[in-house]
Length: 112
Length: 111
Image (cartoon, rainbow over all chains, first blue to last red; front, top):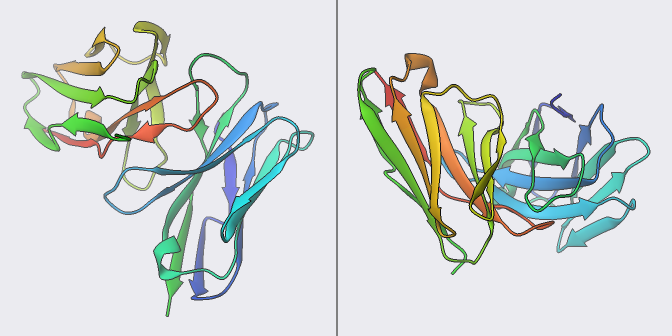
């Protein structure tokens, strides 16, 4: 079953912060986060593996709570370039290939 | 080189046509994927190849036929498609436990 993301859409002014949540009904091994701009390919942001770790680079970070089967993506001091649709991708078990199930998506628009 | 290259970028085909989508990567990744994405929807996994063998088929209709001629190439053969098959078809590749790199996709229209 597809992970559910919230919110479905959000509009921010440049410099504001946002949190995007991803919730699964299944036990998870890993969570991937991607951003897709209109008409472009999804671009990888980060991966979180089972263990409840938090990761981040620059102004984008994420957490993974394996007990709650949830992950959150944190965007701080948003920039115009952050606009796009954010997808979480979840894996139930490790393997030699990733069987990612993508979440419902969150459309983020950053304005001046 | 961190690119996944897909050709063609756009394809219009009739319901009786046979066509193929091509995907190429030179990152040494041993897993390659086909995804289908409808407008405003998330990508949906279709097929996974691991070490050039088909490892996952997500109950995709037989009018879609994947092929992995070698570790760098992935094809998707199309035959007798329906208008509802119109979508963006994305190819991706990865190593185990790491991120997937996506190609720009082929926008397919079935008329």
